[in-house]
Image (cartoon, rainbow, N blue to C red; front, top):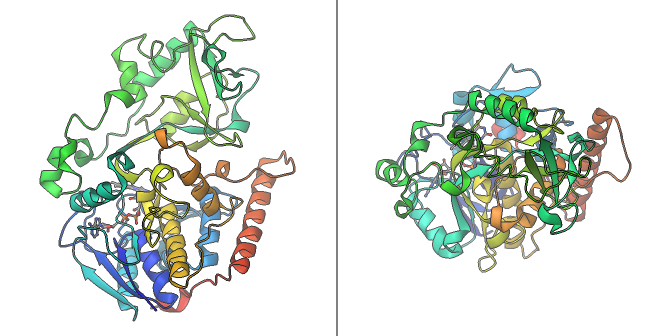
Amino acid sequence: MARMTVAGGGLAGCEAAWQLAERGHEVTLIEMRPVRATPAHQTDRLAELVCTNSFKSTDPTNAHGLLKTEMRSLGSLLLAAAEEARVPAGAALAVDRDVFSARMTAVVAAHPRITLERREVTGLPGGPAVMATGPLTSAALTSAIAELLGDDGLAFYDSIAPIVSFESIDLDVAYFLSRYGKGDGDDYLNCPLDREQYGAFLAALREADVYPGHDWENLPIGRVVEGEGSVRADRGGDIPFFEGCLPIEVMAARGDDTLRFGPMKPVGLRDPKTGREPYAVLQLRREDRAGQMWNLVGFQTRLRTGEQRRVFRMIPGLEEAEFLRYGSIHRNTYLNFPARLNAYGAPPARPGLIFAGQLTGVEGYTESAASGILAGVNLDRIARGEEPVLPPSTTMLGGLYRYLREADPDRFAPMNSNFGLLDPLNERVRDKRRKRERLAERARESLAAWMREHRIEAVEVGEGVAA
Ligand SMILES: Cc1cc2nc3c(=O)[nH]c(=O)nc-3n(C[C@H](O)[C@H](O)[C@H](O)COP(=O)(O)OP(=O)(O)OC[C@H]3O[C@@H](n4cnc5c(N)ncnc54)[C@H](O)[C@@H]3O)c2cc1C
């Protein structure tokens, strides 16, 4: 079997290395800590959790729970180690972070086919490799990736507007219309606000609680580079906020009319019910072909998630909004997947160089780990002379990858797992719980069928992980 490189010993890198090693390959896993630090990691352990200790729900009728079910079907080292490190947290899978990363480190390092090297990867490996260096990829490697993919192939901050589900928008209030009737009729949904509603919304937005960000996230990128070598130095400037994508709450603070003349501009959006232009408008843009996910245009924000629910639900038509993705603004190095990578995450010129984890534009611990599993499965297939494959978009993992390849490259932003990513059911199921159960059932069946069709076996994790 071929020798393969995995760059980055985080969540995605550990899963990818394990998949490859268990499928018979000799793997060199290269982690730069402790030789070189990142601004967020605190230890030299593999799979260190940089923030919360929760992997979220395990209930398969929850989007995160469903993704875990799929990861288990393929064999997930992370989930096996998390079970061992589990602490009580209701339906969520939360872990003692030290026990968890110590276990991951011990098990990965002890695998007879994995060689762990502690050094910084500064260029792209020549042979087959998985690149999983995460949102804090070091400066030298970031430059090498930019050279391969082109300057506009990489982003250094995410600036994310919330997404809500179509079925949760009140269509008695919101109306379909593109500004001045341009474009296709159903590209945009508009939530109209009168003067009073706008005033109340503005007041709530100005008082809402904001996530302050980590100190290092608020530094201009040039200074971060000096301190930690984490981001390219030639991107200095007044980070974190670019003028073109200011947080909605920062715009609100600038003046009473800033939003009304900016992202909430009502011109050309006459409400068919009144025949008049509203005082202000929130526009929602379709995010997927099936029209299940709708993006609050221009509403990138650092409001805490509870505050996003409270304040954005004040907008007429969104009173019952179900948030599939919350808004956020983070330091985050990620690639423009739809513009620069093929369907399974490799640059077309380098089919054996597969990107995985948060670098690809998936968002979150489990999403990153799941993408590491898929990268391992596909690099193994390439080594065997087989075509890489992707799970169908009736599965959470398949839905995530469909988003990555089909998203609009001009405004590509990271995505977490949610039910809006899956193909809609053929039948109409009114009860929400029943609908989720049906989606989860279908996902399980279609993943199993896909694995059978492509002769993909789950790798062993139980024995290896047990102490
Ligand atoms: C501050 C912060 C807080 C976050 N909080 C959360 C949260 O609460 N919940 C959540 O779900 N997600 C959170 N995320 C996102 C989180 O980083 C990802 O979900 C997840 O860790 C990504 O996994 P990964 O394997 O892609 O990257 P990582 O887990 O970051 O792993 C990448 C690894 O590559 C190493 N590396 C980097 N460059 C090189 C190089 N050149 N050579 C060798 N090794 C290298 C790094 O040291 C690291 O160990 C947070 C991210 C950050 C930055």
